[in-house]
Image (cartoon, rainbow, N blue to C red; front, side, top):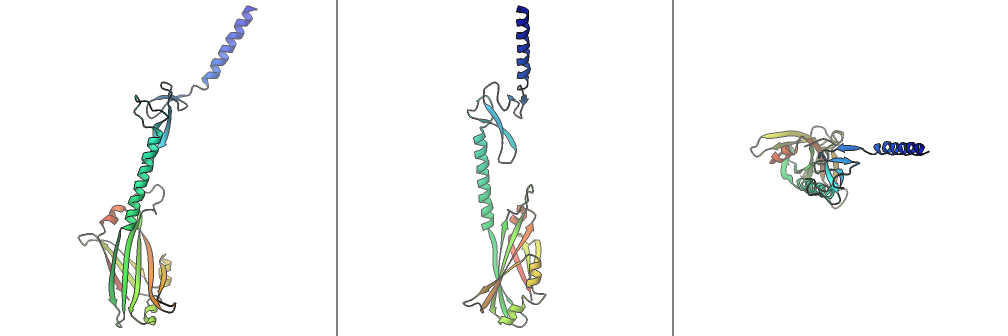
Amino acid sequence: MPVLNKSVAQFALAALLLTGCGNWNVKTGTSGISTSNDYDNDTGDIIRQEADAYGQLTDCTVGKSSERRDLPTCNQVKQQRNAQADEGREVSDGLLDNKLSGSKLFVLPNGSKIRIKTSVKYNDEMKSEGERGGGELIINALILREAATLTVFENLFINNGAKIDFATQDADGFELDTFGMPLNIQAGQAQNIVFRKKFGTTTSDLVGMSLQLRRPIRSLREYQKIARLDVGFKP
């Protein structure tokens, strides 16, 4: 009978050890710390990974951090990430507020006069996921009827051929990019240009037409080199 009890005890001990082996999932993280289920066996701290300000996963601690381990707490990583995001939004908003603008008077062959007011802003939020550096220019043009009959002015947006030419230049006058904006409504809408009429005191008093075009730009660096915007008009 004592022999039987000893066998039962040995079997129970073996079963317990085999069961325990399934939970001994010991691994070495990027910090080189031996952990079990994200748990530091030496100090009792919980080790996890959190995305930092650059989107990279980094080891961090939850709860009280060990001074012997050169790791930040997960809350510190989150705070730095949020601070970086806030700074990025401020920079983005500042770029969107920064603009190139101008006003130019043009005389048509028949003596009529129009004024073109332009402004260009940079928007970095068009970047697709994973893309770096790109963005878009938001080009606005307001064409005002300074001294032209309503018929002459309206024909600019009906007949083919009339367009605004743009050239971005650096501080030395070197052209960085050139592009055109057709005034013909049908041709412009085919290029995703948005048209909006500007009226005076009544809806029959058409005083101007605003156009908006969004154009991709390769990098923020290229935008920051733009010092001037040269505007031309072809009736």
